[in-house]
Amino acid sequence: MASSTTSEPSPDRSTGAPFDNASVAARLAELPALAEAKALTVTTSSGQLSGFQAIPAHPDPQLGDALLLHGWPEFSSCWEKTAALLLEQGMSVFAYDQRGYSPGARPDSVDEYTMPHLVADLDEISRAMRLDRFHLVGHDWGGMVAWHYAANHPERLLTSTVVSTPHPIAHAKQVQADPDQYERMEYMRSIQDHPDGVARALLRNDGERLIALYDGDVPDDMAASYAARLSEPGAMDSVLKYYQAADGRARLSSTPVTVPTTFVWGSEDIAFPRATADLTAEYVEGPYRFVPLEGASHWLPESRAEEIARAVLERVREHLGE
Image (tube, rainbow, N blue to C red; front, side):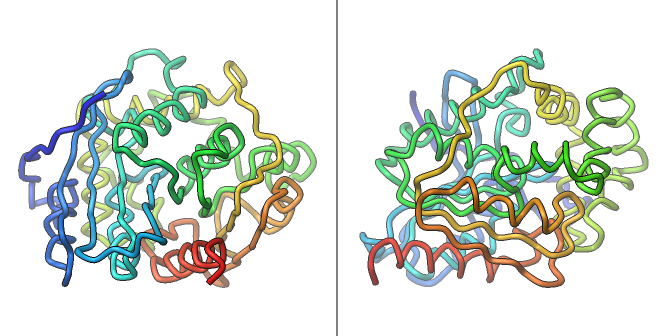
């Protein structure tokens, strides 16, 4: 495993403000008292995963490192505001674009997008970045990876903050028992049944339907950047394979989590109702806090960065006994 600093190509500014990793790192580098911020490419067994890293000039060694994991259809740039807030408090931050999103890691086979591979990416990249034990923050698919990682590698985590995504067992039970939760998963069944058609529909007319998914909760320039990056050859086809692979073909343990955990959920989440969010508590045996955000949507990293950062820091400081 090796990591290297890279200079990413300048984005097409006609799609909006630049939100590639290099541009995010450049903006973070302008923060006061920041020692270093850079775009990275980390070579792992899955290919080259791109991301960004930022380190405060005077970090609080007790607060440690935060690794931020994005969901669908987003990139690690969704965490820019959250990262800035964590950096202000002395936490080092690392985020990466998951496989399919990183141009250097887009396997062809659906089998390469199962949960064991996503969890292995997280473990491998955290070790490549020399993160001993760290604070994990995940949203949407990143949240699902976080639940599985916490269940299978608790010794690697200090705390876990999951944003939007309920515990996988809670979700699976509710899909079976709750007609509301079942209906909310129709989009997932559509992707599994017609991935090519969904990809074409989402990207048609400069990603008009894709941008509509964000329902105004993702800033226009950021939404345009997501659409532009997912319009790259093979990108949307690759990221939809997460859903195609979610058919039970490869599983990991998602038993009760012992890591100190916070679950942040928006009351207007289009995918996950309150009943599923509430059931999540039954699958966390470690210290647990549920943070419902009234009036908030699914797109919390872009629209509720302050609340996410506050939840992360409260969990971290509580873990430290402050």
